[in-house]
Length: 188
Image (cartoon, rainbow, N blue to C red):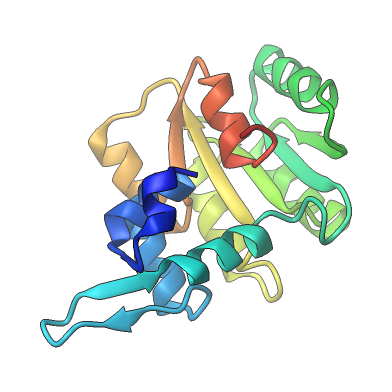
């Protein structure tokens, strides 16, 4: 966390987004769903108390308060899946990984595996990642599953489509390992 943010009483959605390494749209979504408490200025702008953001960050990370982090990796590229599995299972934190190689398999495994986070590829055979994300977010009890989208072909339209479907952020391939580990709160 940026030490300057700790000193501020209130944060803007953009500052919270930088702190949490997500898009401002994701922060607004958290506020709209009541997950992250916001105060509204007379001008209609959201402001977040830094203590509330710290509380949310601790709750948002399931490691330490709900057992090991459970990550479902969904990608048709078996090389990417193998790399991500090795990365996540090879660290110091307790991470349980399950994989799926298409959106349909992901739909089955999201029920049986109960992931905390889904790392979801955008381009897969049969069904796009944005549609898989939309379906996950609409399932009872699964709306709070974090979806981090991945794409080798990320452009503004693709990113907007994924965010609108409920992804909290989009990563380009090849994956920035440090950013991914920070998003999963496995690295400071």
